[in-house]
Image (cartoon, rainbow, N blue to C red; front, side, top):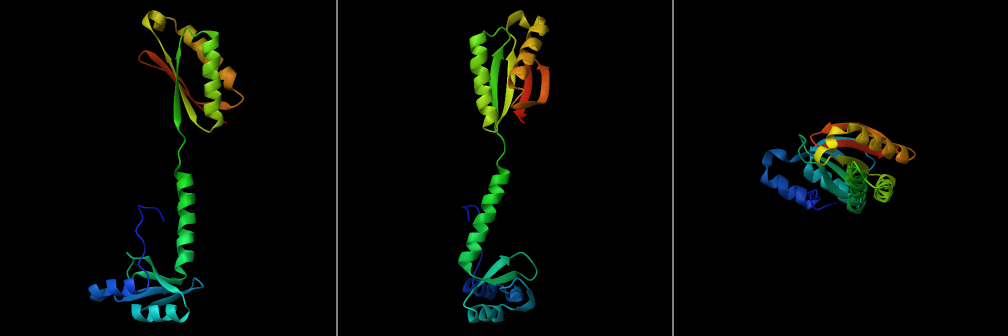
Length: 179
């Protein structure tokens, strides 16, 4: 379990917690096979778990009554860590890398930026292309359009245009993502 999650109460911790809350002395029990056994006193649920040499684990403390399950605590922690790893893998978002181009970029500089763009795309990142206009370059939109087409052409095998080029102030912005 990671640092942000609270460890569930187990065995005697459940009883100690319930002794402080007199109206919550019953639990909904799920046995070691995953079948519901119904609502019963927490003491009886703990006795049943101990008779099987297993632990009583509070699965859902906020339910009415709280849900407890009979199982091995080590196995429970392992299942939780697997679930957390899967969730964190799903949560990982693509990183958006930014590459700045000038309208009058030289061939060598262009090739270096295209190589970097290719590395970013191949590693699964999105790339935000920013073409900055300096001085009066903004009056020559054809140069920027040519550059955009050149970038798309050079990366067409590995990327797709997620957001087409749009003028934003003195910059032209486009987003490429992996195929």
